[in-house]
Image (cartoon, rainbow, N blue to C red; front, side):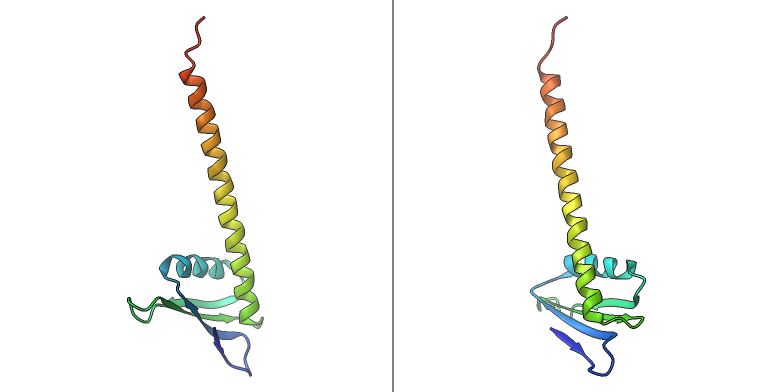
Length: 105
């Protein structure tokens, strides 16, 4: 849910329900890498409340568009990490298979 101003689309606070530090900190990192972002921070109102409030201010671009772009970039980064990990597992298993064959000369 977005809590923003109709006059200034470049600054908004977003409430992310059923989320915690894992997504919030990752998203904050991605947002701070974007040159259009002037400020980004988040807070969790209470430890028993599974909600994150994320404040975002941009250089002029609509904050909700910048947030969407950063979410897309985070998903791409996660996909890259996953594919790199999966390939490393395959390579490791192949290497272990060769070692366990005990080839005789």
